[in-house]
Image (tube, rainbow, N blue to C red; front, side, top):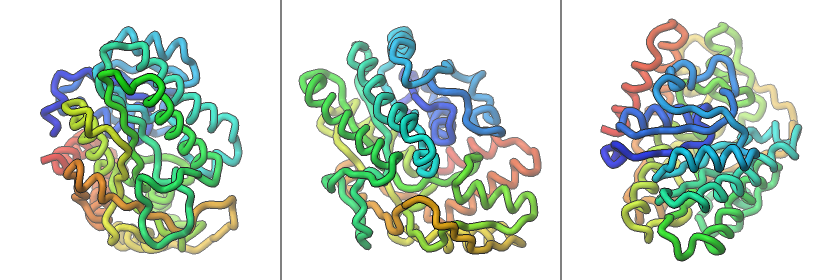
Length: 346
């Protein structure tokens, strides 16, 4: 699959984030010509800087809410492929600043689609959203792509709106064009190099490195945990398929098999067992509303794209800790990142 991207011009929004950095490193290894548009990296340290990506690709620091700058940047680069990942991605932060969350996640999508609409070079566009776009009924079965979109909290709802914006633009402006447009909804991604606040794996790693007990605020919530390369593999597959045949353009779920849909408590148990010598404590804090049970049905991606999860949550955890121990020992994180990318896409 990665050979398809050799020489392709790929524009990525949100390239300085955790997923964006893994994506850009993957594309660069594939030989793509990559430009990114994003705010400065959101954390210190951050994967974008650790991988030295600012020296390997064209990196534009800009706000997705700035339509004029975004359009000018896209027009100058003339990409064939656009991957939209820029977002305010944290549920709890969306309660603290809902206006910024909606401006970024909704109007940011409008702006990138406006930029694509005015750029004749684009052939394939992907809007990356989340498993949280669906109206959550706390079902024990997975949500399918035709389920109702209606996220509860400001983050989830803003991503539902982003899906609706994409649908409207597709029907209003791109129906008779040569641009293929899809959206991808993935589960909770984990992987080495995530330094975000208010995410369970980064919290575990920080505590383990410091020798502290891990605090878990909601150990009973079930989530579809998957390694970041699983969903990125799905994204890259959609983009290639619809680039070559527009009939593949659609909405797709990318999540793990049932065995990797586990409670946060079981995830932390697995982390402690794999890391060794660390424990956790239940410190449920009430907090704002978040779904208790969430799972995706990925039958469509499997049937239509031939996509399959490759790594179980045990495989993913082993690689997270492999990466994190390289980082904590101040060794070569570029080498371990590239090694894991090559292992996944071999």
